[in-house]
Structures are given as structure tokens and as C-alpha cells.
Image (cartoon, rainbow, N blue to C red; front, side, top):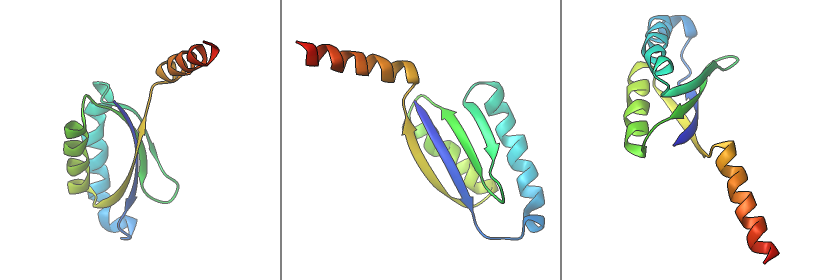
Length: 99
């Protein structure tokens, strides 16, 4: 299951949480390596945008709690579908409409 997660951290001075921010990057690196995180991008100013590929909602819930333990934040979670799956669905819809 694909989820785009955009974080909006609490408004603290970046220098005050530099250690936690470094811990976040150490935490997310193994997730990048094993494919749980397809991509991660720091947002301009503060926060991050992460594309998670997880087997279920419970795994995403666990990961977001781990993330929030490192850097408390509000998370916007956007469920996504793979582009190939989206195109297959469109093809099925078109075929159904042509009948």
C-alpha cells in the first residue's frame, strides 16, 4: 500500500532540535534501504514528504508513531495507488462503458 505522508513539525527553532533531526535521518535510512520508504524529501523550511510502501495500515501507524517520537509533528496522509494499477482500472472502466 502506498501512502504519501507530509509532516508539519511543531514550530520549534531548528537549531533546538538538530539532534532529533539527525536521529530522524538515521531512523529513515534503513527504511529506504529495505524499500519501505520509496522516497524521502526534506521540505523547504521544515518538515518532510515521504512515500511509504507498507503492507497494511498498522505498519504505517507504527512508523508514524516512531517518527513522531523523534520529531513531534502533524501528518497529512494521502493514500495512493500505483500508476499501473490506475491505468488497469481505467481500462476496465472503458471496456465496461463500451459494452
